[in-house]
Amino acid sequence: MGQIIFLYVVTAVVFLGLDMFGIRYLVRPVFEPQVGHLLATPLRLGPAALFYLAYVAGLLFFVSIPALKSGAPLQALLFGALLGAMCYGTYEMTNYATLMDWSWKQVAVDGLWGTCLTGFAAWAGVAALSGRLS
Image (cartoon, one colour):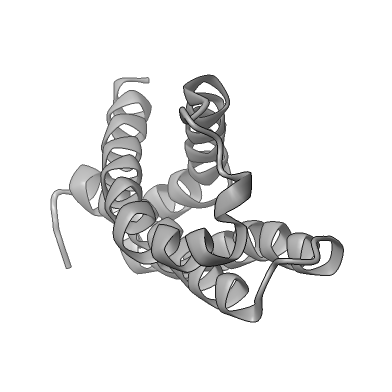
């Protein structure tokens, strides 16, 4: 159980830390010109916290724990990226299909960001727990 808690904490810290950077410098500059008028001020922290807690738990369940059992951090990277592409892709493509002001640039930037972020966070957690960073 201690390993799973460590895996969760490492994965969550990496995911949240990098996502704060990505949202600020990659995603927000693309979203603001298109849908800035829809952005909540102030940010609603409760729903954001629920998302992060649940998303990291799902990432562990579907990707990191199986990769850890296989001793395969690269499996976590690849399957994490796949999960990220599916999750962020669902969000982006649904918004593009249903919201008039959504752009392909938003789909591409946020979709690629979520893919890379999810894969890297999964890899980092598994690699840290396996005691290697390769």
